[in-house]
Image (cartoon, rainbow, N blue to C red; front, side, top):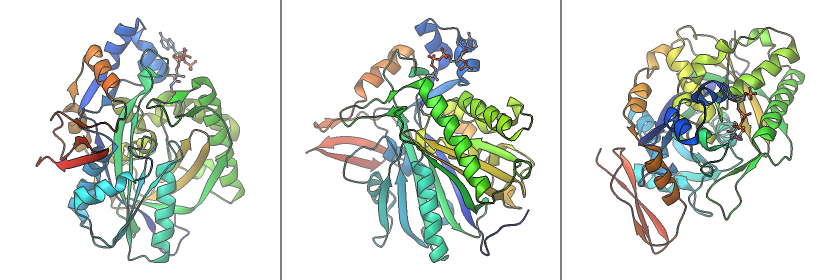
Length: 390
Ligand code: COA
């Protein structure tokens, strides 16, 4: 398997962060009078992360980005792209707070991107364009979200929280992203969040068909552009609002291209997402992180990565895992982070949920998180963040 681009461009590093708390879906099933198998098997989720009152997309995104910068420094970074669909301000980019928290240099541009769960992929594509023009640059991409639906709705078990930070660079350590990708856009109201709401609205059944249509449409576009055949793609990871979605879509693709499909083929990429819940823009990249950490036979493998953002935009990218990627594995670190989350009762989670709506009123947040950064509160309408010293 050889790269098509004269210079390998791709993901040099990838770090994952999540919320301080966790809700076990067995507990939610009991509270909702639902068979737990519906959540574990029917939806394919085991738990979801819940941010502490002093956490949000900025603190999670900064935590993930700090890990990347601790390893690689800031050299060459002139762009920070922050993708989210749970933004904390209608004007100021969340990445500007991260820029301040991390002490990034002044000569850096920062911008926020939005198209539902697809925004992280748009950021990666923009980053690739920047480093293709000047390969001495590196771009910090952050994708962070808090997935919030109303309580006691069908979507409640598919909430979650998390962030990914990636360093996009030439001659990457982890994965070379290939230049061809498949695209698909359709105007559809399967999931959205109006400006006066802090919880999303979703037509769950429609989101399944819209997602599957986007996956097949992106596949066909990639094929039309001379992309690799199914036999040349060794693994797949998907955006996973709940992991069963990836199974449904992949089953359809297998029928479309007439190959057999076993659900277990996708299981490794589900490992972290089953625990974090939906992380919107970060979801696909958390799946990729799990694959890179936990699949022992990836060197030189071609990975298909399907990104979907409701509304809707889909993109199927491919990448070749670098031969020495195992030297840069973070195996164990994410498991430790997930295991360290503090469990919540359903009652405590619902109290936090009720208090979680966005506000511009003056408020001080209690000190709860043990992450490196915290959301201190709001004064004069402005949000304040600080390092915790952790
Ligand atoms: N054991 C095993 N499976 C069970 C079960 C049990 N006891 N009870 C139900 N199930 C299965 C159902 O058969 C169904 O499986 P299928 O889809 O393969 O047929 C699955 O569990 C879900 O149950 P269903 O009743 O169809 O769905 P729901 O009304 O509870 O809603 C979602 C499920 C996923 C649609 C809902 O949680 C949702 O809308 N989530 C948000 C999705 C989203 O974010 N979309 C936008 C981003 S792409």
